[in-house]
Amino acid sequence: MTDQLPTNIPRRILALRAIFSTNRAYRQFEERFRYLLERRRAEIAAGVIAEARCVALIGASGSGKTTAVRHLITTQTDLISNDPETGRMDVASLSVPTPATLKFVGQTTLAALGFPLRREKTAQTIWDMVKDHLAARRTLFLHYDEAQDLSRHQTPKELNSVVTTLKSLMQHPVWPVGLILTGTEELKTIVNHDAQLARRVYPVEFPRLNPLLDTDRVIHLLSHYTERAGMSVGDDVATTEFAARLIHAADREFGLLIELAISALEEAMRAEAEKPEVIHFTHMFRKRAGCIDGLNPFVAGDFERIDCRRLLDRGGET
Image (tube, rainbow, N blue to C red):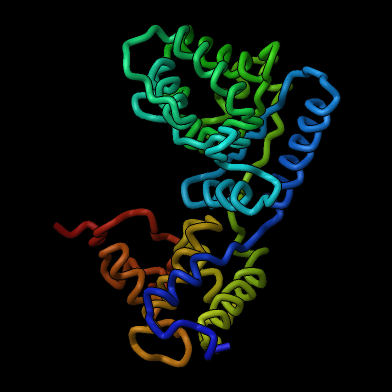
């Protein structure tokens, strides 16, 4: 396996980052997406116009939800992302802009569809244009990342307008479009704001890792990535105690844990080590967080007390 790996460290790390590790939430998300996609295509083939549905993928920062959607969209061989000849775009994906006013979101959606707005228009006109261009591009799904921002700093009236707009996309009388919403816990505020919207949503949540239940799984992941890096697994990292430390360092988030593991493997590569050891994870976290060793979860005895999201933590020192 080592002979097949690029010798250049940045390229080796890119190869590791290209690995996609599934979990139960991703498989649930993929199954729901494929169901809605096949149903929508069957309706189009039969000339039936039926309201579309929404999948809401909810998880904390670092859970891996954005990567999950990107992987799903890019690995579906029967999806056309952007056909220059026909203009077909099966899935349009964009991040909710800031500020997330209904007008600005509409403008950004138009740009994602390839139609940047060059003149000032009202919000209603912009969203009418969005619906027209979704139909023209034969778009089946519209993905909004960081969708929780749609509810931030909104008055009740503005939030009602957001919800009404989302429902109108799925209920369009000519070309209904399914939605994929990815966001943090705040996204629940939107989907639960209106009962009519909630009944059209299939929620999928990325759960946090459990240091009591997921250590074996984490050890397996470490082994997998280490082998793909052309290394052997160090005895001091293939333990349940170390897996618990890594879970805590990642704030119990699946995507962030993989990110930390790859960064530690890079430390081992640069040290020309044959296998990753605790010291490589220690150095990695020290560089990442800028913390003292007493607040490094790979060093401290009482690591569970550490807030691993804090940067440059000196434990109260000035």
